[in-house]
Image (tube, rainbow, N blue to C red):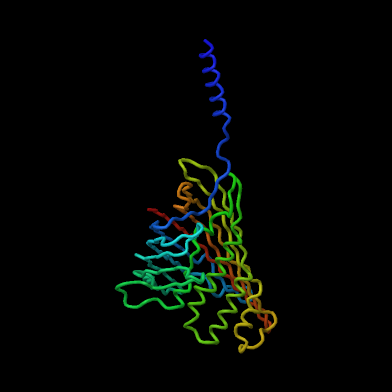
Length: 343
């Protein structure tokens, strides 16, 4: 009898302990890597833009705008394989990336004054078919090498300079554990990413420009970055079957109220901008989506984002008794999908 009572009491205590066990309320989204891991990554993106409005008014009468249209669709796809060659203290110190596929297509149409034109071009990439090895040498210096086989030409030093060992997923994750339902900030990481893009990717594009053109482009890039503001947050909304669901909300804006001063700085040879001439631009981007983080593997294994883009430009001039106004507006959508398989 006493044995039965003791067993029953133990059972009740055990059940009470289980019922009072707290649910998972904090999640560690730290990236983890192991030597020998292979990441097969596929990404696809689509950008669709169209001209919504174009109007030019002179002394209150419209002289241009009606019957002008523009549409553009760009699609990109990439498939790559990353092999983790060395890991030290949890950080990747050597890896090899092979770009099995990278390219896309751009289509567009333009209508003006009864005339129509269209474009359909492939977006080729120099990376397709190449294998890049990235590692730290004995002195801790980054070494990037094109180890591709059966390619016509290896990548240039400028192209190799855009590679490093920092995982792109790190820009989408918090630095430490977070509670379910708690927002974490990502804006500083995305501002840093924008700066890297301007310095490396756009910098590479400027290599083909002359000195004066490159200097002008640099002025525009710096002004663009100074006018850029980004807000970005993530939030873990739940955990199920070892997968944490992360909801992302991001917005970016570029507001430039004085384009004429920028034009004068870019092209000083054009002379002083006449009084009464002004122009402004506002660009906006709103993105939201979901990521899935495998808690056992310590990796972001999928990402789906979609968003809306807009751009507005306004200008005005009042000279020699004539007033003119111009405005243009474009809008569009974008989607981005990423999936990762890990072995």
